[in-house]
Length: 305
Image 1 (cartoon, rainbow, N blue to C red):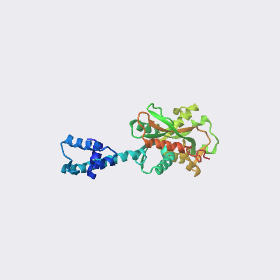
Image 2: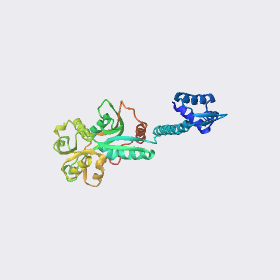
Image 3: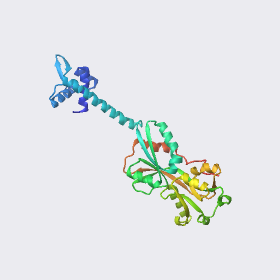
Image 4: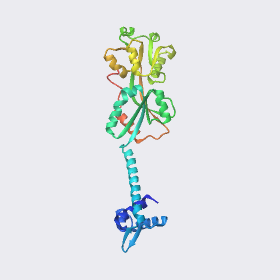
């Protein structure tokens, strides 16, 4: 039994006329007659009685008409579902993002995308860079967003934005009364840093290596699992830290943190996709959306005073 046979049967049953049904379906009359005859022969059941020049549904035909209509309605619904996915009228975008990106860069882009496609459901999960990469490998998300690049041959890194790391201390810290600290004094400071595996920690340690300072030479007095916890500890006077300009901007403007005039390198934000999984139309559309809106993380906060 084929869908085409069902469509022909329903058309004939509704019109009680083979020729009219064939015309409505843009078929030859013989093709419509053959489809009905094939159904009746295949199941050894009469669907129509021929009464003179007209036809009438048999009891079996009336019962089958209900089922045939239900099946065709389900097929139409399935076609509509696929069409909605194709037209971005339905679907889910699963995203995993590192904390800095999820907290300070990504939300405005997700909001603008949702406004453009209000029937798309967006699910955002937050972790550090290592956790995001793991989620991408295991298929928990279609897109991941991280600070820096992830060295993994199964994951594609796609540049989406730039970010500026800044060095900050409390306003009561000794560095707040000095000018630019020397490279040598960096190893004398007490550091409050994000946990290992975070993009911020990796970017900072990479910057230190460029200056000839190994991670083991830094005096790390506290590791914390979030940007907000790091910022709060430094505001309280525990030590100094390197965090995203966007994370620090409000506290600097409020006089809770001091921007230490020590230049740290920019870092890149990247989207991650699995090389061996087919990207959805929704995922492709979101990356196109980001490309159209691409700009630095925060012009105002990238050079805090």
